[in-house]
Image (tube, rainbow, N blue to C red):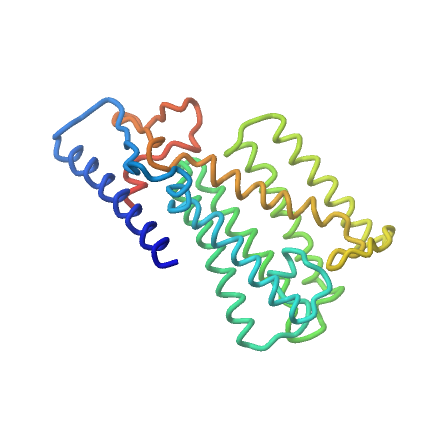
Length: 275
């Protein structure tokens, strides 16, 4: 384990050194090519190791999925009946203060990590997308708090949590095909997932029209895979759509336009990497 961590640290240092070398040379006028390229400094290292060592992997994959797994396990150990992301956000059953602090620390770390990454990755004209993410995620987290009393159920907080969960799903469903993965088929697929999820959820939670499936931690909630898969695919799409890894960051000195075409979502400049 120590060797793996050491290897990641060495690759990260090489990455930073290469960026600083190009930045310093450009600022001092030592070389001014029309298009700056960061060459792959990985040498003989496998490309998947570089992907694991990148900031996007840490912020959009390792931290979020680790937080979901840890906090969901906490909720299930507390006696939560279902295994939704909402149950990872807030335990269905009462839990001690130590768990509340740990849970909310992990989720705030995850939310602000995603927010800060998207804020830097997106051009200024799309910075509102990052703020919409922050608002929707925090609203969904805070509105679902139900640890200390039974006043959550059938209260305005429960309905607000339902609404904020819908906002998160719709936001990701619009953001993914509109900003990160610009394919019409992707937009249609995400729209269909949202419609199926909302219809199935209302059928279970409001109309009680679907019997239990008998599957542990799922029960009658047949919409479970649609919402969770949508969140997972959206996160992984952002991870690999942002072209911030070594060897693919290409910025023009004159106007910052990317060689990758009319795709402002991958318009990363060296200054962003240096930060």
